[in-house]
Amino acid sequence: MPWRVPPADRQAGVLPDPYAVWMSEVMLQQTTVAAVRDYHRKFMALWPDVSALAAADDADVMAAWAGLGYYARARNLLKCARAVVADHGGIFPDTYDKLLTLPGIGPYTAAAVAAIAFDRSETVVDGNVERVMARLYDVHAPLPGAKPQLTDLAAALTPPERPGDYAQAVMDLGATICTPRNPACGICPWRGPCAARDAGTAAALPKKTPKKKTPTRFGIAYVARRADGAWLLEKRPEKGLLGGMLGWPGSDWSDAPAPNPPLDADWTSLPAEARHTFTHFHLRLKIEVAFVPQDAAAQRGQFVPAGDFRPAALPTAMRKVYDLATSALQGD
DNA sequence: AAGTCGTGGGT
DNA sequence: TACCCAAGACT
Image (cartoon, rainbow, N blue to C red):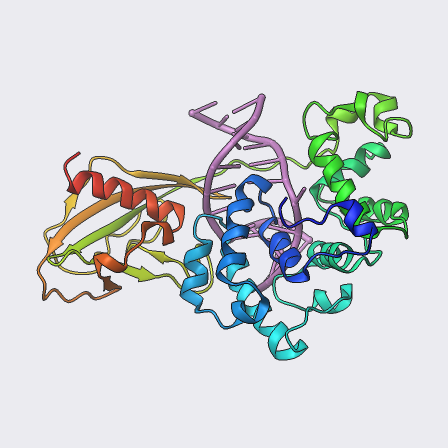
């Protein structure tokens, strides 16, 4: 990870930029390192420090975050940067308790920033640590109920020396050796004390309460293109699914969506539909397309000139609609 | 305090 | 295909 300071340098007293650490930890929430790497690089280039980010336009930040998911993180990223500038003189607070008060920073991220950026002895508890503790102590109680117990075990094990290295090491252990499937117990530095390895239960831990299957919702998306090439788009409400992101005007998403075109036009249904899976439901979007005259008046949304429109600024579900619509409009 | 909130990769 | 999973936070 390019934002990480190697252990040798850390032992020599070099600590990473708290802003870069905070940025990485927010991006890494429920997100893989592989997916984060390019976004972290892009954000650090666009906004090199917290003051620059605090001064950024909301729309630019949301567009830059497009594709990474969990868009509340981007909204809170901006809120947090502005709070650091307004309430902390542009300097990141260096304690768990103060970090915890900031938007988008919860127990994990507060502990991670305090430990990694400030070498404070705080206990990070992410999915990796939960798994490592469940195995090390052979805990069979299922998550998420077992989280408090696993947190206590992790806290009791946290050493006072090199807190930042330790925090990252436990997570690295979970990410590379104590993996969800096929844990590499044979090369694990903790194979000696590991109770689950001794009991032969490592691969079956941690247990999790079963989740119900994801339902399917349906909807209609309207892609209108004006004579000058402009696209009719709409900024979604700040709260809720894809909050604050750009999208196509559409129907509700439900079992039986009600048609809701943003303007009167000669709509044509596309044969293909956009399919996308969110965390808790599948979505199947029918697509209606129309060419409209230059003086068309939209009841919802606003026309974005072709030169200003970047499909990469759309969340993935909306980009899938765009891809299908353009291939149809251009006849390939 | 259970539900909500994305996406891409692995199996 | 259909699930699982990822350095969680917010309501």
